[in-house]
Structures are given as C-alpha cells and as structure tokens.
Length: 326
Image (cartoon, rainbow, N blue to C red; front, side, top):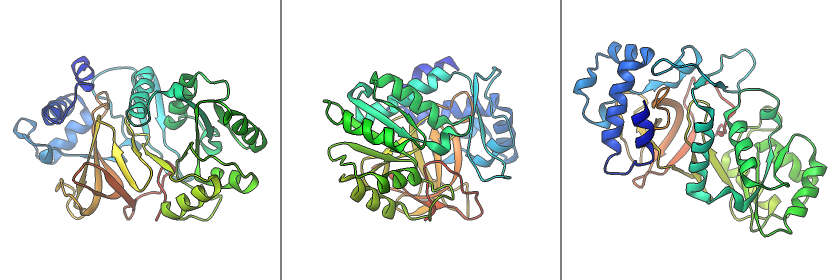
C-alpha cells in the first residue's frame, strides 16, 4: 500500500498504465468486494494487460458494502447527500490528512497556491449535515488561505456581502464557492461586482429552486456577479481526486485521475472518445478503497482528456454533489 502512495505523485503519461495495472491486481487480491466482483465476471487479474480490460466497480456498491483494500481502521467516513429515504454512499477514509493534502494538490494544479486567495464558502445544505467530503475539503482550503476573511456562510447574507466588499480591497483574489441555489438567492439580494475574481458552483438546487441546466445557471451567475466565467468542480464522496472546469463546460481531470467512457449498453466496453456514454473514473488516490469506479454520470470524452458531463444516466438516483440534471 505504501508503494502506491509513493508512486502517486510520480504519475505521468508513460507510467500511468503500468501503475494502474499494478493497482488493479493489488485491489483485486486485497479488496474482498472488488475481488469477488472481478471473479464473478470471470476475469483473471493475471491476464489483464491493458486499461480497457480492467473491470470497473459500479458506484452503487458504496451504498451497500465496505470497500476497504487491506485491513485498516477508518479515521472517518464520508457520506453522500441524497433524497430522504434513499440509501446514500459511504466512503471509509484511512487517512484524513492525506485527503486534505491531496485535494489541495488537485486545486493548486489548476489555480495555484491557496494563500493567494480569500475563500468565501456559501454552503448551507452541506453544513447542515455531517460527513460531507466537500465541507472537509473547503475547511482545509479556508485554513490554508491564512486569511481572516475566509470562512463558511449559512444564510447570513448580510455578513457575506460586507466581508466580500472588504476583501475586494486587498491584493488577493476572492473565490466565492457555493451551492447553486444559495448563490442565486444571495445574488438576488445583493449586487456584488466580482469581476477579476472567481465564482465556483457545486450544482444542485436541493428542491429550493427550479432546476436549470448548467449552461443556464452559469449564464445567470455571470450576469449577477459580473464575471466572464464560472468554475465547477467534479468530485464526489467516492473519489479523493477532483477535476475542475477552466471556465466553460469542459472538466479537466487532475493528473491523479483518468476518465474513460463506456458504452451504456455494454459496461465492459470502455475507451470511447468523442462519443457519449457512461463515465468511468480511475482515481489513483483511492488506493485504500477502490480506484476503478463506474459512475452513474453520462458524459463525453475528448482526445485531450477533458470531458463533458451530460447529466445522470437513466434509473440512477439524483445526488446532491456537483451535478445538475439537464
């Protein structure tokens, strides 16, 4: 297990396939649930020699099984949000500090050091429950900014508006990072010009407002905050790595994750490019749990590795993290 952790930040295009194959064979042997799934598919790990041959575990297994690779005691458990009455996902985490530092590396890869920012997190629905990986990530990010202005906000919009205006006078950039419905609610009350700063949305109306497409949401937010682009993060309870948009509809994976597309009629067929299908994710940071995940998201992959999220696949629950129904 330590060897995969040490290899994580040496990943590159030349060695990624070899590391993935080694990780697959290790998890097939030491993760009882995944090993049983691979065996059920009649796949011999010793005969798997290409990424396209690796079985991806349906993400629904996080709702019903403990997916630990090896024997260890969880330091915490991340849980997904969901509609009342639906079973939610649980991801046991062996090393919480590793998750925090890795999430920071993913962010820094795209946006630079956190101490260049003030972060204002408008996260009412996430703060009102426990076990959110997004809240844990942002809590770490806020601390790492070293800014007295950075912080979480529930419904205290007056304080948020006042502190944003004060932070605009500093030489740092501002990140306003919020749930879609909360950002729109705030924008309707206050006219805050954030030109030159960053707005991040996590998606989801949580039943508070009418669902809209991501394109429409971004159009509204750009108008409300006078910004040229709105950023999104692709992350979830089941992943330790994140992908981000650079402003626009395309997500770019951090170097420690790889996205593939599968035929929705044949989940074992992977590697389609420029064609819509189901998204599969290899998260190399998930070496303590399961790195090969068949998501319930529909998307399209581009030759440069970027991908577009098109919505939820049919018959999948709508979950509240970073994705809107289109």
